[in-house]
Length: 394
Image 1 (tube, helix red, strand yellow):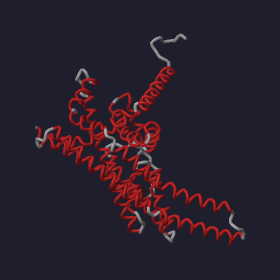
Image 2 (cartoon, rainbow, N blue to C red):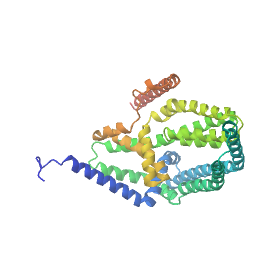
Image 3 (cartoon, helix red, strand yellow):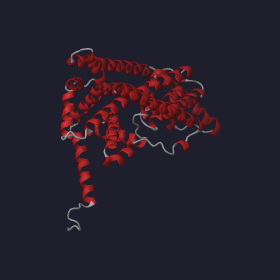
């Protein structure tokens, strides 16, 4: 085939080459999963622990000792989370007999309703359905508990991660210099150095911000469920707060589980209705105040990209990919925003804020306006700090 312009490559050749490259990258990520997953977790943890290690080193603590103490702090934190999750799941599993009794009672009431209003005997299939539901709950609660704890243990206690983190913290300056030399060999623009520092700050701020949002939601959800009188309120509150990372689907699943539990264990329909209403109000504040103020001022992925990141990460690396691909998307957005040819892709990854205010409810609009005022004050404070720092330097 002859080209009109020999120096020009047809667009379909470029598209085929891009698809081939993406396929090879995904295939390599799947094949190298045992190596890349612990290394990726180690990079994230090392970036988060770098400020703590730097703080210790300012007080003349040797670098290897600062790295070791930082890892001990992280291990203690993760161990506390595992202990808390284990106790909450075990306590929830102990109520399976109560749920079985409540299900039997609901099925009996349903049978009476059919017999009274339709003057027919309940079909035998209804009884088999009841037996199937009860047996499913009885047989799978232990598997659910064991599977949840196995997944948490596999991720958090993977023995290579602390070793990788320790080495990354010790050789962080050496690795940073390698990146500068490899990507900016002329050392004229300094753009690579600026992008590296911004990506590091974005990763730290994004993960810390999401963690703060989860903690705030866990406290608010716990207070709401305790006031309503739901058993295992802390478990449901933390579970819903963690699921809130998943846009749209997460908040719905987080509210349905305690609502169903209250429906099965409590005598009135007021309780599940109150739970759903409470989660709706909390979600309004989270989406319009907490996340935009704490996380959105730094970086924010739009819900479509977040869902795609979770889905693609789950297909490639399983549960680990669902966790890692969200901060990876935040880092990619920051890199795309700094490269002129990639700015449209950074725009695609970013949050969709224009035009959304018109479709909000009155309450959500007021919360959003208050959030914007807080963000504006934060920007003004940041500008004042920069001016004061410049004056001190002068």
